Length: 241
Image 1 (cartoon, one colour):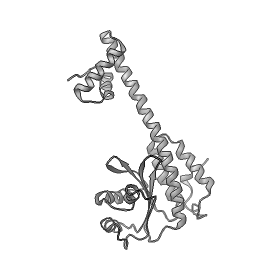
Image 2 (cartoon, one colour):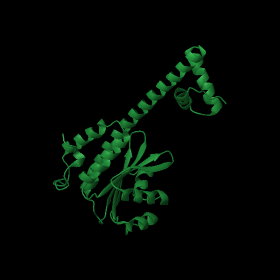
Image 3 (cartoon, one colour):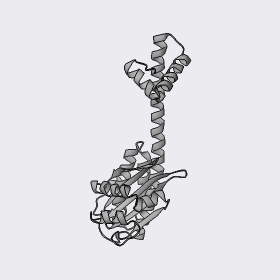
Image 4 (tube, helix red, strand yellow):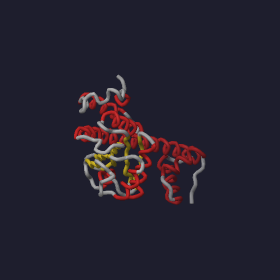
């Protein structure tokens, strides 16, 4: 089946509201991705195809107290996002940090909600924005941002489609995050197992004793257990403070 995010731009807006079957297929495509970067890229590319009026799209990701842009349709989006992060204001941060499902900015040249941000980005040719909160039942992931060079570029249907895409994206990201955490956990377990095997063979000790040595090295060097194990597996050396 042809990838839905690569639909010909001459036909992408034949219907204002996209076919529900197309969105369902797109959701399945996003859900099938096991890597976060692939999910983010699919989301932003789908936005400029499916959302009426969209010219650029990007993701703002919340990680602890930091914010970043893991995916964008072009470099202009990253420049705009840096202005949001620097000024600590803008539609996306309002959506993500103030837990607003949708934030609309019909004309940034007249909008008074984010004066520093608006002044910076209108000079870059951005007039309209849509931002959608990306969230699951337990956490806010960040925001999905849509940009246009014209004022009042987005319709009610744009909001409707963006809301659906944001919901699908949040579910896909949650699934990919779980898969990524599982891969990391399995990789760490394998590395620790290798390190234990090295110590068992070298000192003719039991698995429990080898594990205790790894924990001791971790505590004395103030490093994570998996990092100590990785160093031992790679170099054969166990550093103890």
